[in-house]
Length: 360
Image (cartoon, rainbow, N blue to C red; front, side):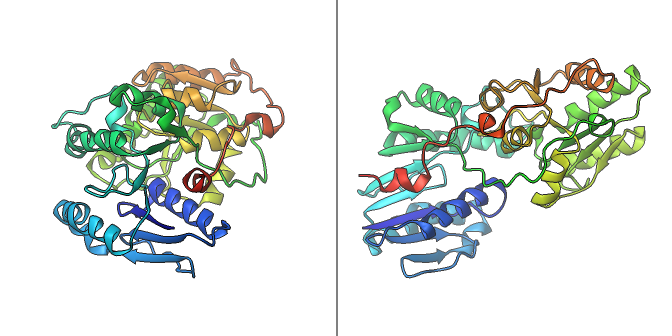
């Protein structure tokens, strides 16, 4: 059998992590009768006897190049390599092919309640109004669909009216070796941490607003750490100027290694105001580290944190509600509860992606 894995958008962040994790599954899987063809843009994965890597870096030049690849080149590759099954990790199926297609949907923008205007963010508007329609059509065309969370499954069913049996929920496998857990101390209970990129829906402005409010409520020392440099885009540049002008206790420390992030999970409280995520990986990672989490009241956060005692929620755009949570923890009005054994805090992983893909 010849299986094509197509993921030309993956270049960094969560999309690249999903690709790398699946590639590792393929390498480790005992599937001698399967030939794998990975169709990618720039990621440099290693070829093996059963894995062929096809790179098309020119796809990244423009939307036009990507459109040409999807409509012309991709269908030709299916015919050239006599593909029996396509596994698309890029939210859309390959057009005009007759083989079975399994679709992995991890773009949540077309399914969230919040709608971006063209003026607010052109790219997100395009994803919701144009690309989103293609994703919905692809879900209908695919033989099988994989999503990461139950809320995404429900959202897909609501948008497409397909049968629930067509969609499988497979959460990301978290390869985390916990070296230390959260330690409750004066410093950790006054340090807040948000590991996130500078995208608008990551909602950093809410943290700044909450910080202003908290300063007016208490004289106690506290610090907020962000994994931004301050110059990622105009939105982040404006955030940085606000912090500098008002002398807010917020540090722009830039990107951190995975080990550094995990270390901070044990020494700080996670603030997670993002309102558009498919999964929200830091939430689960902090839960596994038995830390304290202040998260926006969203479907994905409620699902991941169900039954977790050290999680508190605030409304997505209510900065005062967040500042009150921060105030309570600073003034010992909120008590940290030591969690039970870590195994009770894990989301159940039913199977790997590859198991679902190669099953009879």
